[in-house]
Length: 368
Image (tube, rainbow, N blue to C red; front, side):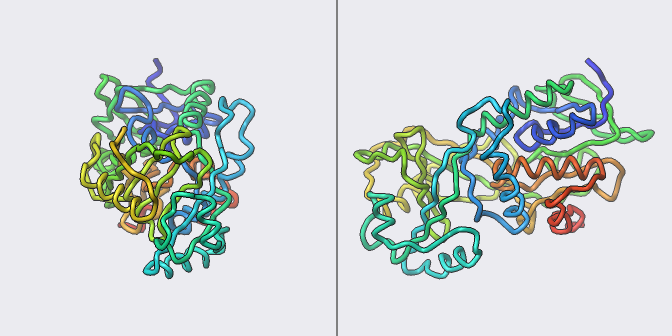
């Protein structure tokens, strides 16, 4: 195995894999991953739905720029379900009318619909729960595993190396090169390191001797239930206008339910909390007439936010060749095509195209 590279990307989830796949065209890339499989943490626990009206302004720009990739993917994508249409139904109880107005005011495709239409789309809707409803029609389910494997495959085909079970243990710069020592006993070098370590992003920065950005990993819990007599395969994703719960079809005949929790945590293999599961089920049952006899499966993942909840992409000004690609929160999958192309252009110091409008907002140095 080669020890010398042009770029070392730390973290082989969706963000790291997509960055490596974009850089492999011009650079010799090593993709370093601590776990036994790529995408073990956040990528493997994604809700897997593309929603245009989700996240801060920079995220929405990259989400919109990623849409064409999902709807017209490369011929060798390896899946025929990369994007499967699924609308988003917003339910507004009387106290959430302002939140619905704010969503509609973004002018990104949410329109108000009659409650009779909401009931038609989701027959389990309990009369009296919502006073108003909105519909976003251009959402879709994403084949997260298929996309992730496409990026890993593209990186390998270009000559890149995926180094699993190699946690970065020491990162030091000397004579114009970064040397990364790993738990697998390797020492690899490159002039550029890209930190795509997600919840571990600040830890990687500290190992490299840099001040943290203030990243906050937050737990998100989800549970799978049987929707009883309801045929849910073609239901929209159903959520409150305040985004304090949602339910979406899963595996055609099940529902995934979450309380949309964002509990600050530490980087680790996070597990679901029983209270959060109960809160999610209770909130859903206030809106939908669905008996829940048992939880079929539950899990949790970490969504990592910067202090202002926007992205952090860019070179660290304190040292040469260290690039931050962190703070994706819950938006890393749906923005991956455009975000990875933007990051690759920034790493190469090339024109980033239309995505470049977000660069001032996402500069990681704003936290210094």
